[in-house]
Image (cartoon, rainbow, N blue to C red; front, side, top):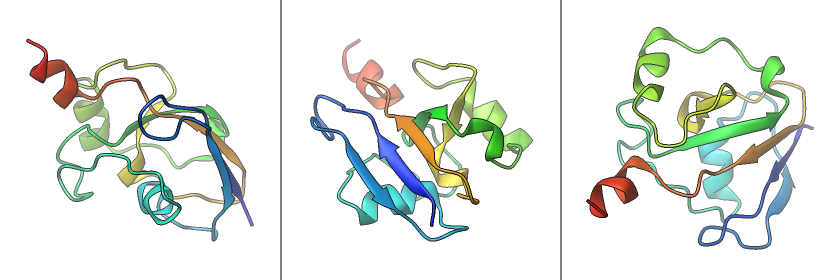
Length: 112
């Protein structure tokens, strides 16, 4: 079974985390099911960017993102070349290492 390694995040998971998931599992659901309280304001319908993650390892094993996801990611805070919306990521057969950005667009808006 593939393993997910979550890098430490000061508020969401200060110690980081690592766990196994079923093949073809959804990344956002897997994070939530393993106690990682990632935001998902649109209920995982690919209508916001609050579940944005950076895939540090295993990015090339993921299916190509849709145009809708790519357009939404353009609005994500802290966008990087290996950014994805976790609600749109299906975990195939390779381990992933993910980083949850320090802020979401909701946090950035609240501070202005």
